[in-house]
Image (cartoon, rainbow over all chains, first blue to last red; front, side, top):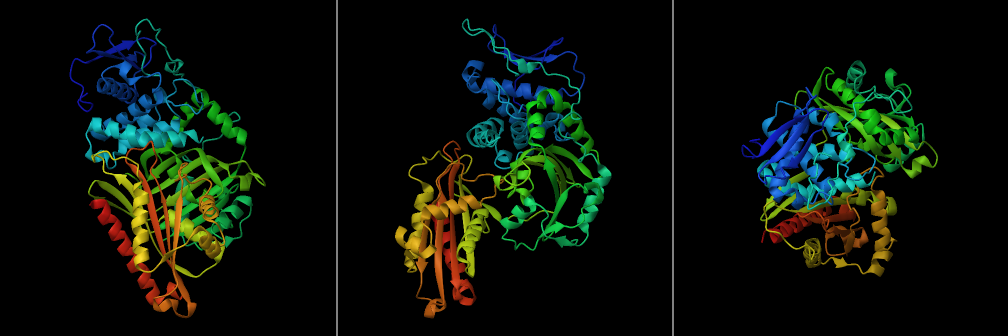
Length: 165
Length: 410
């Protein structure tokens, strides 16, 4: 939470039997965001939780989920979250090698284009590793500036690569 | 899908089916590809030991893929070796060795069915993701591996294969005590170029071992609001030179400078119009002209080179290997040529001549910091490719570089 500069009290974690990892604003409180996770998961939850917390960063950055315009920006949002998850691994979880993310079955991409897809597995890997290795200029930028730089400069190139296959 | 949309003003909340992450059963043993190379620890150790030995006996390429790869280097690259006897565990593969300074690689391939690749992609989520996770996990535990495994993307696809194929999917394990590692093993599948698939397989499976690194020739330089990558032996330059030599068969010496124009991360936003690359090209032309180079009109250009500008640009573009990332990505490549045929000793008696080639393109419209590239190649031909001619080429190239950087910094 500290890595993502999320103040205490903003995120409410909820365990849901048979559920899935997801993030949604609390419709009754604009300052609260739910991060839900499947209660049966015993291990391998770090990567998907980092990805969900990245969505919290994105929602807060945009001001609301509506402002993110998820219907039209789905892949941008998901790859941005992968990138931020990579940054979290770099900043706070350097002892881990990132395979938690890249092999997580909760973060599987698809090679088949579909509505609301998260990008191809290769796109997700590129986005995550850009954050994970935090090469210049990211090494010199704080979190939110890094996200903006990613959106403005690297996301378009990832999408171009993906579109060729 | 990881964001569930709440109800907004009466709009129904779409709930993605992606949430239903399926716990999978491995399906690789069906019609799909087999993943058994990155976790073959003993075989990998053998391959790395092979790379430590002096180059093995080489032979002529044995198949269409080898011929395409050989053809891409004009059959002249002494660092490429089509290996007569691949390691036993790769006996069904054709292998190519490559060595350059401390870099060594062994790249082996065999035909694969295009349907195998399609099946993998179509059923990745439901059938393969789980076995891939397991595969990478096993690969990361081989002795000597540094624990970092990942997917092969355009930039980690074996360069030796790029004339013949382009990556579809694959996986990579790094070796060494550091991160990034000092060696790697890759295993993947690629679709083949039309020059291959017309006469051979539509797809290949490949295994790639590499140790050592090829030292880059790019230096990042901060000038004012710019973060520039200055390359003194650029890919574009070598592609261009190859195209030129192929066409003219001339003895030549080239000083090549390529500058990637990128704004520094926190620099004020700058309009992409007028084009910065255009403006820098104008400055470079004026310096050449101060040295009595004369810019060729389109007609003179065609007369001198035997091709129109558009034909030469097309040749440059076509010289980019099939599987290499497309650096132009739809942008227009501009080319200008200046010639100097007198005024320096090496041009006396028409024994030599000098040329300045300028290539430039604008930044990608959707990449904020990208302002494109300017490359200039100062070339000495004939007598100007040696002795004082070389020195002149180097000095002029440096003068132009300094002037461009000064302009960007002002």
